[in-house]
Image (cartoon, rainbow, N blue to C red; front, side, top):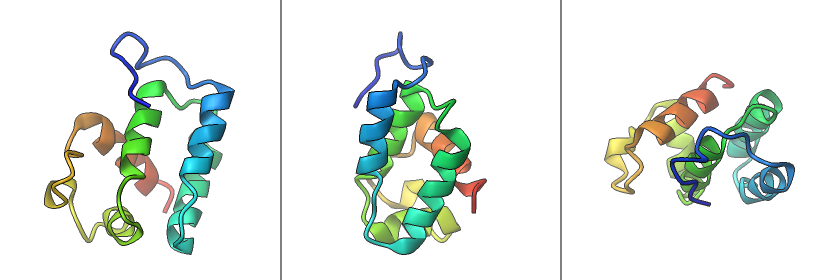
Length: 98
């Protein structure tokens, strides 16, 4: 879903948002609840860059994603190339909805 630098700040379209919501469905209820709250709060203002960062977070396992949201792990501990400003921003947005 990589948004290039020119489009990074543009809002995500409805179709892309729908695909992202589908991709964010998780097997762990706790993650689903956090993500639902995230979408309830940010769906209307989500940018392409934020959507791309969220999609990158969805590549994590459910336990790793939950550990990040609960502060039990740091991005730098996962060795998944996610220790970036855009991912950190989205993770902070997720944490605001705990």
